[in-house]
Length: 443
Image (cartoon, rainbow, N blue to C red; front, side, top):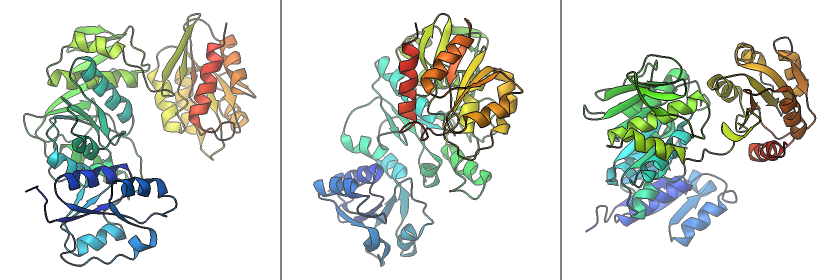
């Protein structure tokens, strides 16, 4: 007899996590119904996938009108985007149905070791990097969780992996109960998702739950200076910004307690924040028995995600970096603060009513010149013109040519717009591709 034979489970959310949870529940004997209050027309693709696998689904007004009675369901599994305090999940909990999150449910049925990664920024890059590192070192892995494939999908697939690189968001951590990874990474913390949480403290508490079940044999990999409680786990710190830590990056090399582990030469990731991702990944690899030499070789073969602090080209002693995905001020500031050497910044795009004056100190400290583009270009030039030389370009191609002409060997020309792209492009990806083409056309 299967684990859940004779039980009826409700899955809330018809997206990828919901489908994965439905598959995993059915594999283990449960009858499954998927609920989603969204517009059935907008959910048509998701509903088609559920129909193709003969899952019963209730959506739209029918889901909103649902009445749940005692005994109708034995478990309700919520997808990460659904707050357990919302009306639909409350209908189940008020009827006495136990509630778990998709990550917690999958964890109870998963037997593969986990490296869990959380943080406000950099989670996806770090998760991809860890999966690549393990796989390249002969230990098959895959990025999953909040990044791409859900943990339920991986567990239901039957595919074999030696370790899973699991990105976990605050939304997923809200609903964990027994979840515990042998290796946990805390990258950083900054205010975010205040549309979901009443204040910054509530968001922090949700993320800190990653350590709630930590045991003494577990490892907590934490950015130096982060005031997070890691429970009983062994705490190991890292920094690429000069803070005292167990593992550090300085002068182009990685160190453990003062001993050089190797150089960053040949690694395509750029920015000290990405060097911190590498440190965290290597500490996780070491916890699973990998050596630093083989890990650095593996990292050198990693192709960074496009449009995220991506090195496009080295040309006449200059580095051209594509950070088109920086669609807010925090991302722009993080990018320029993480780079060493003089920067000529290409910034601007759609007018979103953002207050760019908050960046004045960062611009003064890290940028030697600016080329401003888009709707907000003239306003940017006015905001920063007293700090650094600023010009305005009508097109991104003109901006690249202008920046290149004004640069000297040793400079970095960085596209990090700090706002969205819809005044000139269909999205940040198209903006990044136009930048790449313009850079490759130089010379």
